[in-house]
Image (cartoon, rainbow, N blue to C red; front, top):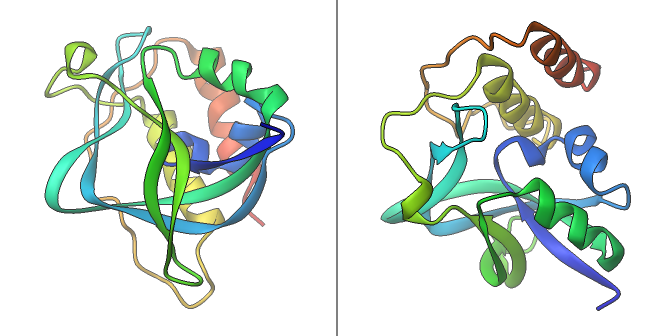
Amino acid sequence: MSDFTYFAYGSNMLTARLRERCPSAMAVGRAYASGYRQTFDKLGRDGSGKATIVADAFGRVDGVLFRISARDLPALDRAEWGYLRQDEFPVTKLECSAQILAVTYIAPPEICRSGLAPFDWYLELVRAGEREHKSPDDNTESLPTFDTIPDSDRARASRMFSLSRNNES
């Protein structure tokens, strides 16, 4: 495999965030996964909720497609600690309505906890990635309102808020 298509949701939709993990990542369009909804039920190493997707017959998860070099796959696997990599995950590319198979990561139920909340900066990274890849005429938000918690690691919070704001023009 020389490169692969990755379906990013959550904080990895923000190109700057993903490139910290995979320098070769290049956005190639928006896509969605039918039959899923996004939650923040994955228990992170820091105790906060991280994004995952769960089956929902009527759901839809919007995300971004990236082309990534195979040399970056081990780093992405490490960054997605606790998730299970799906190598042939079906998504629909918005620009052409074509269904394609992409790599993505889904947290297994045994590391998910209902009622977790993401850090405030984490949710801001998700929203910044969503804004970055929207078309100019799209003023909808696909994410509903979620409760967040403040991060006691102020240096990390400051760095992550800065990353989300550096993306805005």
